[in-house]
Length: 393
Image (cartoon, rainbow, N blue to C red; front, side, top):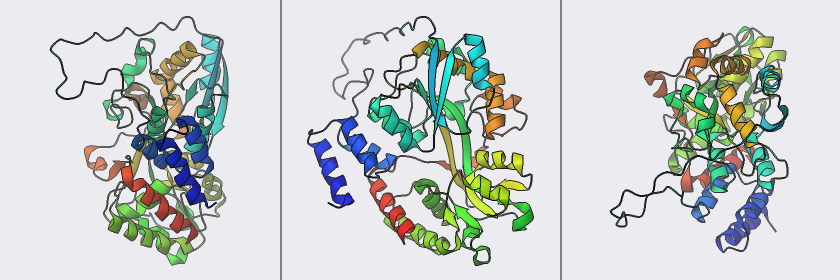
C-alpha cells in the first residue's frame, strides 16, 4: 500500500469514528504527516470539544447572567519531582540547579529536536512529563487532542510580567494553557569574514558563485515562507499561483545549496564550511559566542516571527511543581539569564530590560515585514505537497 493511500485510509477511519484521536495521531506521525496537517484533520473531523465557557449558539443566549466562573482548583503542596521536555540548548545552565536548590525539587530534563517528536511522546502519556515547550502551531494540535492542562493562574502571579505583544495568540487567545517562553525571527546567519557582504535579500540563496556554501532550513513553513516573502507575498498564503511561484524560486536555489538543515548548521558556520545559512536569530547568537565573525541579518523582503511557550501536558503528576517552575522562570532576573543564554528574545517585559545582550521588541515598522505563521486551513495539504516536490525535485 502506498503511503498516500495509507494516509487517506487513516483520515477516513478517524472521520468514521473507527479509531480515536490518539490512535490517529500515532499513525499520522508514523506516516510522516506534518503537525499542521494533523491539526487541520483533527479540526475538520470535529475532534475539538467546545470549551465549557463557550457562549451559547446564536438565538439561545437566555436572559440570565449565566453561571459564575468556577473557582480555580487547589494544587496542594509542592511535589518532590518535576519532569521537563524541551528543545535542546534552550535553557540557561543554572536555571534548573537554582530552582532545585530553592524549592527542594529534583528536576529531570529531556530534550527533543522537533514538535512531532515531542507530540508523539506526550500523546502516549508513558513519559510522564510535567512541562513541554511547543511552538505555536503545535499548541493548536495539543489542544485539539486535549493533551494540555489549563493553567491555575493564582499559582503564577508573575504571569503579569508578560508583554501584551505575546498574549492573546491565535493558538491560545484566552491565555489559558501557555506561558510564552522565547521569541525570535528567521533570517540569515552569515560569516562576515567569508561572505564579504551583508546579505540583504533572500536572493542570496540563488547566488551561483556561492554554490555549496549555503544552506536553508529543513522546515516547510520557514523555507517556503522565505520565498513567498521574496515574491512580496504572505508567509501564510494558500493561493495556488503564489505557491507555484514560491516553489519555482526554491527550485532555483536547490542546486546551489549544500543542504537543507536547521539547528545543526551552527557547527558548519563555526567551522567555515558554510558561509551563510537561513537560521533563527537565537541559534545565530549561540554560534557567535564561539565564532565572533558570525552575524545575523533580516532580509529586506521580510520573514516570520514566532513565540514558543511552556505548557503542562494532560495528566501531569507534579502540577504544583510545574506551576512553581513557570512562576520561577517569569522572575525578571531568571528570564533574563535564560534569554541571554539562548540568544532569543524574552516575552517577559522586565526580563527583557535586564538582559545583558538585549533583544529589542519589534517596532510597528518592523512588524510590517514580519508575520506569525498561522493555521493554513485547507491549504496545508498543498503546502505539504509542494514541500515534498521541492525536496525530491
